[in-house]
Length: 113
Length: 114
Image (cartoon, rainbow over all chains, first blue to last red):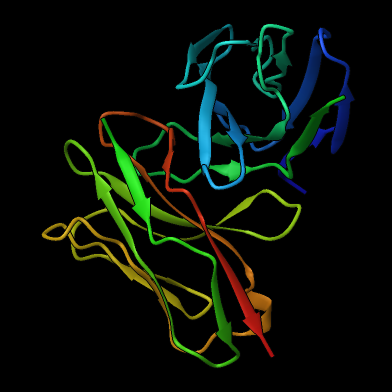
């Protein structure tokens, strides 16, 4: 089945550690996105990529890093510089057509302990 | 910049009641508008969309009409079911961005009681 796979579903991290969230898609989409979801705040864009080996900062990129070495994969690293990393992280992908919708993964819930 | 404002929640209804969730937006140009739904512990699923003024998106009994004059995209359903309980997000993409870089509203939690 085509879709987006995020792993792990739940992740616990100690303060001061970096952690990497995985996102893989087999929809042959050019564009991929990372969003952060906090209660009552909707979703906010962290990073996005429209082509391999290129990516752009979204609205809240500080404390995060990404890579896009393959079209299918767009991992997100939450670094120790992120002040409040506990959140639900959602990966999405889309074509580059105008007016197109995004397809979302099931999310990763990160908790800093 | 772009922004989306949704009615404050949570919303609690009885089964078969009429649902309206208000959504208004601010955008330069002519955005495309979307409603996404999120069930507990899951990612977002597209519910419906509209890409130009006066378009009506519809799916699973839900409807929303793109009103440029009032910059609104209100979600409606004539008779809700318990299975409609979820969080609903209004979102837009602007015409100057290829792909689907979305701006979201805050989300509205809907609970439908039997």
